[in-house]
Image 1: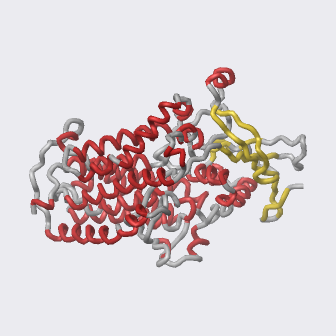
Image 2 (image 1 turned 30 degrees about the vertical axis):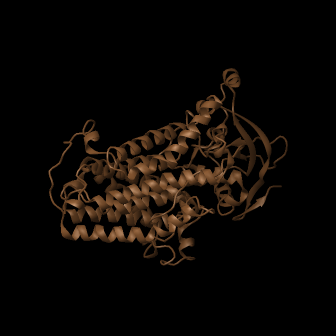
Image 3 (image 1 turned 135 degrees about the vertical axis):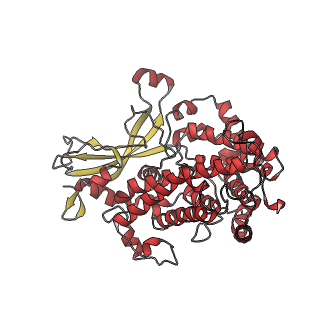
Length: 482
């Protein structure tokens, strides 16, 4: 079965599996840390309430069998433990069936979380992690040769990630075609990083070069993934460099990191052996027939399911991120089909004064990632995902994004909910909750070089208007303040 084996992918397979396990670990830890505030019994959109509305067939999840806050957190930490074991290489030394079972359990556990996660888990990188995680089940371990078909399926996934993102840009905002999107994007992206201010102030000709290079990387380079080595490896290396550029310039959870992880699987062992322990050539250990059959079945399933994402790629109404089945297999991907030119931020404030008059002293709630205090430099959080901060960015774009959860969020602040407070960088009312809470809408922009030198601020902002008028608790409900 020499045709079945990818001889130059022993190190690439190991690097991919260990790195994917790191992403799984981050995802499970983030889910555990944010669950009670977002999805718990007293969360902003409780899972229990969601499960009352949907069936297992509509949204497959273990939580249809049993759900409680403790059960959800137990699932998160069980997934984190299995991911950590895989990072440490324990799945390389166990029998093949056990290794496959570990990867399968990781996939089932995270699928169970995503399928009840509602708006908090509606991001493209959730489906990307699930699809990559499902393919990892069929990569084997050190007891079997690397299966060529599964590695090709990983390349097909990487191709869809990059090519889909490239197409959605060319079909979307005209600034991508005019090479001007980065005049705005570093400033208006959902969560700028510590170097985004500097990227924004690069000369405009360099911004145009960035966009042009991005188009080449996403629309031309992916074709090379299906060519022989070293062309395929070179294409993957170009993608890795491009994704690292995006990592430095912003915070996109694990999207960029997972794309890099997929590209690792394409790099030949002759390259990886120069930087990783292990021989450039590995003796064959054979392939169990049952494993080969499973890989063949997987390939057939992916080929059939690929009809939907291919049709989407060819469509003029291309969807940016979509899953065509409840199991999140063989999805379509894309990012930033349109770029916002102006940045708006919701600033949430509270006061202990009984009336919201001119003399009331309002204090701001500081979020961990999203801009707030103009003097605070943006921080690096990716690959960790701050879900509330991301949804606040969407809410500032349109109040419709805030409708399912923002009112409950404000109510929890008025109640002094400790789980919600832990999602924030600073709660200005640590001892006693405020009497009133309001939300103001501001326009934010990066300061100029001169403004930065004079004030030390990273942001300049101006008030646009009210997003939510002052509200208070009246019984167990929100009411507009006196």
